[in-house]
Image (cartoon, rainbow, N blue to C red):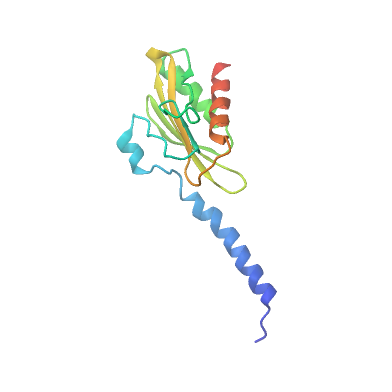
Length: 154
């Protein structure tokens, strides 16, 4: 049987490209069961620049809580709608005052996870948003939270 090295390499590349998205689809949350144990508290950011949080001490990772008005139900519904407008969004947990969402990037399928703790009596939403892998996020998580905040303000 005659071998075709170009065909073999092409077949391997196609196999890798097809396997990567399907494997990534099964990985919906980087926190897994840890998030359930922590809820309804926000998990801390890791010691990497790919996360922002209202609880962070480091000014580069600190982000202000989202200011909101309304009761718990209306804030929750508006927040869920704002999250849904973000590219690649998926709601992992949506309890009464705690929401966990994941966001998958279009090109490489990277997953970011955001946690939102709704505090209607304080008129705010505390949050944490971070990349599930890698080291840098090039400001993606901060910009996404700012976009969600912008949608809530309307």
